[in-house]
Image (cartoon, rainbow, N blue to C red; front, side, top):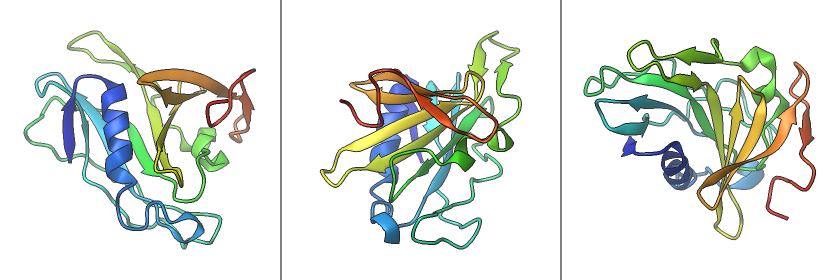
Length: 180
């Protein structure tokens, strides 16, 4: 759907704009989630976002939204693609859910090496939320380090850490979901 972007930060920023502009993706309690995969291709020149899915994995309620991540990547123009994680919107809440952060939801392996380049990759889940002011918020959850990051001014800032298998969070001193 989108790419290539030279840096993950560029992909994440643009994916936030693309995904939260979909119908219902920013409609609060009455909204819908959209899911996608993101990946990297050396031959393709960077990071890419897959096509979106709005297929539900369960019935939504006012407080719980869902979408089913695509189960496969099909990009014949980037045969060397390395799948790095999933991405989804939150129409009603900027925070990760405990389900998003639980060890049961981790992508295994959580860290791996590309045999061709020797580069080490961590699987990371991205979440996007559009504020009522129109500002797009981007967050990442690194499945390996268990750190939660916020994309602020084009840079990832660690704002918290998941401290148990259930996905409970401890925010870092002086940090929150929105800049203080």
